[in-house]
Figure 1: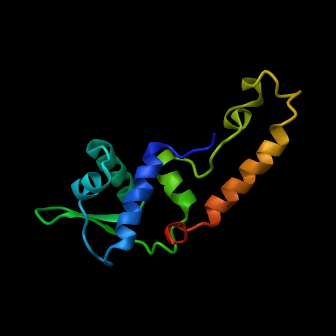
Figure 2: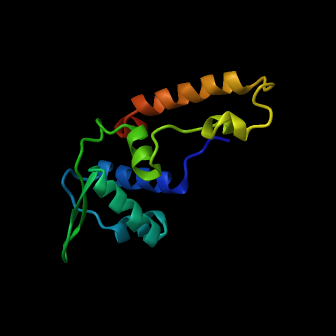
Length: 136
């Protein structure tokens, strides 16, 4: 079954939280973690990845936290996946995740091509879908 990793889910939850709030408002990892019952340590690492990829800005100090640095209408879901997973595409077909040698039925498989077509269409949607559209 196709599904996002927990890390990608948590990143999208954090971005959504900042998207629906007031523009320029600073949010803390603890606030987001508590509100959505997410593991704080993991969310903190995810937030740092989002900072490194310039989705959010980090402010240090007593009143520190994070603020969305990009317009959510310009952030593609595939970009968030790439920031967290290191790849922008999802793979639903095991033989496409590795090499043909990794699959013992690669040459006789009758569902590979239709699934690759499906995978291509899913990735196209993720490339075109913005986080704002996703949350609307």
